Length: 384
Image (cartoon, rainbow, N blue to C red; front, side, top):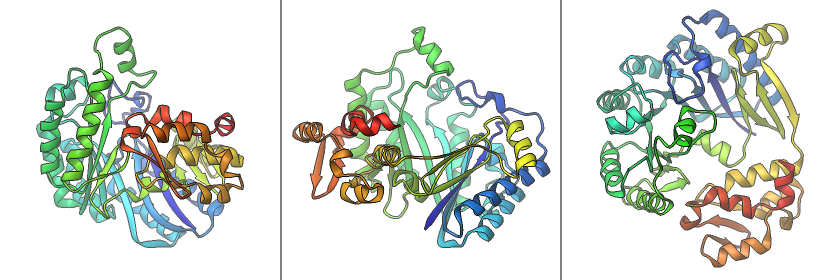
């Protein structure tokens, strides 16, 4: 079996008013203790998974690009000792586009990282200030240029449908982004997450989001521009040249097995959902006490697994094979999808069926979250 490994580094060494990691800011980090904890947690996952083939490693979380390259190298070496590595093993690290982090890119590449995901978020200084980012556009572009010298595979993200943003403004920004020539772009519509400063400001009327029609027009424009540039959408928010798709994220979207280690990390393996202690100190003490940082391990009933697989798989342009899914989870096809609603949305041009395969059309991708709630059978949704 194939396995992806997610390594969550919990610490933000810079405060960001719009993320939920403020409680994880630390003045100092005991790297020796954290190395021991993460290695123990990884060894526990190896015992649980067996010798699956490792297809990807992803360093994410707080500010993983500020991890010492020596620690990154140690964790990669341990992972490839525990699991046989695929010949094209993808090793991704999330990075903020600051000059401090960019200075470590060459060392991180030597440590074994072969792909970087850069959180640019915008090429506009006013937008970056609104988003609460600590870098400006010039610093972000400079970090991207450093990354392009250090890594063969680069992705960066941008956020659109920001307050007062017009389709013309986004077209200019996206044209500039495409000109950098990276093989992958993650392009997200701005959403309001509960519990953030954004949510409070939005509730108090300090800003307004674009109307639905404007946001839909920007989404359609985005797909047309990226396709013309040779980076078509392969997932609702992700665009790549052929062969440059994120193998790690494809594991999630195809509902493959992945092991999660580090504070707050989730995993799915062999029908079991795992979760680690979220608070760093609790995670650390749990690894000393138990040899792992897990706070929960739960077997997922077939219906719950099927619901998750549908909700993830229909995000992809490749769609999913309902017959194969029914066989995988031991459920009849008619228990996966609400047939009457599927016919209704097919007639509206939002989905299509080709044999046993179900696809969401571009017009449906604009409404994906609502559409998924309609398509997935009520019985499966009740199981989640």
